Image (cartoon, rainbow, N blue to C red; front, side, top):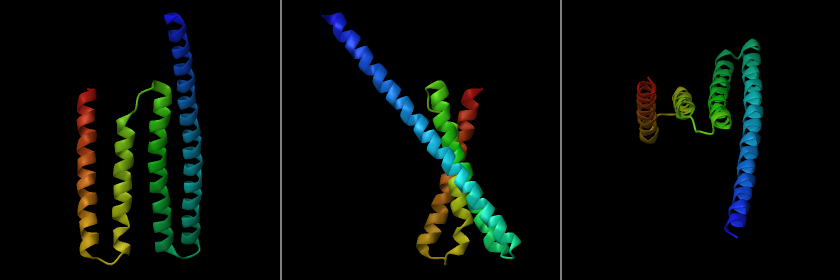
Length: 142
């Protein structure tokens, strides 16, 4: 009787594990599509530059390229999990830094207020904390 329960339990765990794996694969495919679409957005920025709108085009292209990097780093986390069945922290930290830098680059397009200044300070602090975390992880890996 006990062996039957263990057998049923193993089957349920196997089914759930397969479902989780399929969800991760689906998420990876969606992230790949988003990265490709983001690159097309960067091409739009380059077209704006060629058409003569240099600054808006450069901002659009830079915005899209940095977004693509964030998406790729998240995708690297998902595909790393599929390969090793462990969550990799470094790509998540790199994505966080890239997102914060991306945000900092676009602060100059908004009028400066106390709230915006607070956001700038928090973004800088977040970048420093994430950078320290990456350095710490690097020392642990050695």
